Amino acid sequence: MKRDKNYDLIVVGAGPAGMTAGMYGARSGLKALVIEKGISGGLSNEAPEIENYPGFMRVGGMELAEKMKEQASEYVEIKELEKVKTIETRGKENGENVLVVTEKGSYVTKTAIISTGTKHRKLGAIGEDEFLGRGISYCATCDGFFFRDKPVIVVGGGDSAVREALYLKNIGCVVTLIHRRDKLRAEPYLQNKLEEAGVPVLWNSVVNEIKGDKAVRSVVKYDKKKEIENELPIEGVFISVGEEPVNDLAAQIGIKCDKNGYIIADKNQRTNIERAYAAGDITGGVRQVVVACAEGAIAATSAYNDLLETNQRDLPLDERPRERLAKYGAEALGEEKVKING
Image 1 (cartoon, one colour):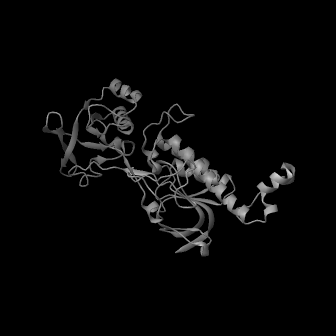
Image 2: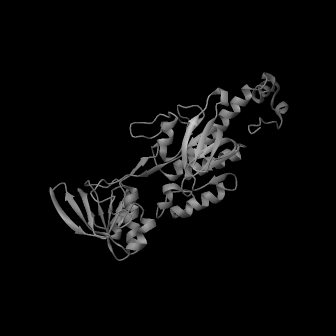
């Protein structure tokens, strides 16, 4: 296994948070690296359309992710298709570094940002695993084209579910939305668009079973209010019932998570483990692209500041920039900076 050079900062995950963190870290002068198990963008790649990201009236999720990658790559290396297998903290005898081991190599870093995001939550219906890729999808943008002019259902009631239903309707699918409650959780703006598009909603309903032969042919729907089951002929099932955090790497180094599995971080994105930070959807809260970017910037800035403080402590008192500034004034400090990479 190849062992690469040491880094000041390694970001695990190249979604909006990870790419922003890598860019901010590198621009601060840190030797940074971003590692991504798939392609850059994370689940934002699957958003058919984003209408609330500043600077864009509307933009496809994949297009926005590509623009972020293009900009971030000007400053920091992004290694795609390289899954991180393990992360471990190392004691003082190893310089209190973090060892990151991937499928392709191992890396040593002084700080690490976890931005592994979330993954799709499963519906839990009979046949869900059996027909995955044969009529069942978690991404309308990825697979919707194959279901044009065909009857499909979207299961869910949040923003993502409504956006997927609208996307499928716009490309020519015959769409029905199924929601387990009598009211959607999606933004009123999206609910209005759904009504304008004429997408029917089956309220108080859950999918108990997905049936088919070589592909999906029907679903068994249970009406919770009427307490009856009926079978609906259908060819595509798009599941959008939320996400769950990808926190296995965080658990390896003892990062604390809340009861739902999201990493607990303070306002500076610091976790309970020194030199380990978290940003993006993995921290829960308001899971929006703009929030993920902000958290990535904060996490990288915190990592830089923490390394700066450490390097200052290693210098004689009168050589520390902040102490010199206080004692001699700004002119004495001049353009000097503490080198973190050295």
